[in-house]
Image (cartoon, rainbow, N blue to C red):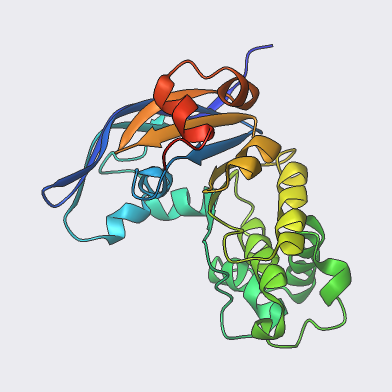
Length: 253
């Protein structure tokens, strides 16, 4: 059965001012799978991730050329609806960033901005998002409490719930567990395995064991170049490039 691709990236180059951050990237991201981006710090992983929902647009002097297609549409076309893109391609950041409001209002915020006013509908959206982010049982009696009263791991699952509440098709995760302890990390990893049934997930991780545990595909980046991209088990057991092998065996990076 042929895998359907959500993103198709062709000859992508990205500059911040005069500094080139990505060089001629070409890759496809398959639907309902977890794709991990690995490599040393500053190698372009997060830059590529932010290219997929045009978050780099918010950075001064950022210039992109090449093609990034989302479901066959060129997302860098001047007529492309960026707000719609960011609704369909949600994002979870490295540090949990709950809004300074209640747990309920954090999740209801996006739908309310989109015009959802009906209380029953909002209650359903919030409950479903919390259930799907494996947080509901822990917070169902605390929905009016401040989101900042949650632990770090709970806050990160709340941020995932907030992304889910917008009914995205893709969830981008930029090192979502780097600020968390091992128990909270394990919960998020478990959650990612569940979420891929309904969403396509692209995750940047510094943790190679994490990439090996949770992803279906792994892309190895070095100095802004995509060195190797394949099924995760192949990347970790039989990499075809020496640089990949050196990185995953700890010889550098």
